[in-house]
Image: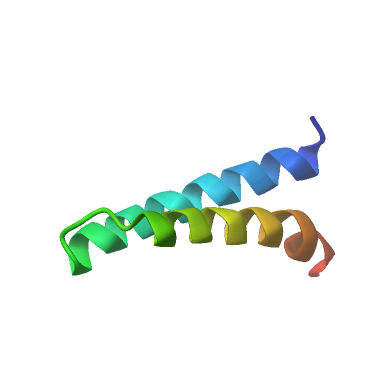
Length: 54
């Protein structure tokens, strides 16, 4: 795996964990749509957007 792909997976995992914590703190329940959305958004952001920012 490329370094860029590994970084995107890390960002995706961190985003999903953050959304899980936010869902529990604010709503008291597990919000699947938010977790999946944040994971996908974190992956796409980490793979396509963040490498080109300087």
